[in-house]
Figure 1 (cartoon, rainbow, N blue to C red):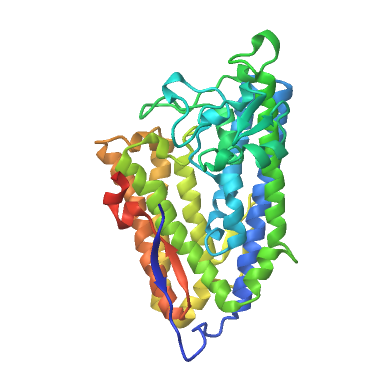
Figure 2 (figure 1 turned 90 degrees about the horizontal axis):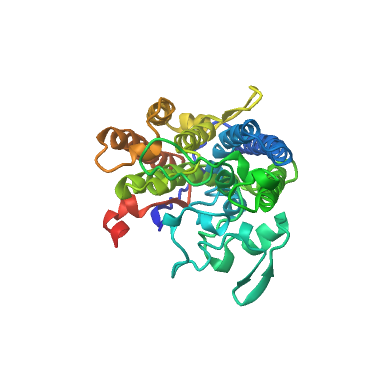
Length: 419
């Protein structure tokens, strides 16, 4: 469970130490970059939807691979938005619909026998809604004869109040495209056959029409969710208005997002915990073996916020007044320190990414006794922790009030992980 690592409340007789930089310009650029990132996430999700429709209309290995490639491309801008979660309630409250993990994939579709069945924690861990047109949920009879975005969002997602019942978002779609990764710490990702979407006698694993219906509905919902969030950061949007209405609160949101994503979320829950448990299921994208990219682009998102610049999917750059400008105005040495820490983190994450792309997959790195894998992952963990220490110093230098950086038992109380 995450917990609060640090709450720094600094009261100052003078205003925050923002020097000559116009703080409203920094926050406007922060909102502009958020809007661009969510717009790019929307654009790539729309391309994914097109690829999914092509797979369903004309099932083939070529079209399955095209849909997978579209999913991978869609993750690049989205992961860079995660730095907006912490500190921006409108994003954090929404995020569970689009990026929740881990998930009990047996809720959605067929799974290997080794997966098991219902558990005390989750009665619906192996429901397989694709194979069942009706079921009882919390005493209510559910009609699942037609799988729609409304059904997924309103009735199936987090069914029975269980967070592991993830029915929507990127990782549900990932599972439907790749299937389970049954290789453990061995080579290979999920290997769902294209015939799982075939019609008639060519259909494998039954219910191919409903599988396509689910995949289409989940992708439609992802598009609509991203469209809504992009609008929240546009002119007149609620997220933009919230950031711009108060300079101090806006800068607090920026630093909270950078610190919490760096420390508790990625360094702790997504990286250090996996090393401690040696569990390939602790991968963020465990079906596609894309976790190395998830971590890399999360790190890049933090850097984007600090430097006030984002490279869009079309190659154009959104940039302007930055948090780095504010810090340099208060303490030029601290700005240089933070830039160095960010560069170090990106180098360490780049090492993980390059190793994975060369064939040393993230789930292989997690294997017990794999010293090279542990060294790679812990290089990223330690760099994230180190840059968080500089973020804490920035909080003090700017005199920002009420920063709460989320922690992780894996970092703060390791013994609790095994209790």
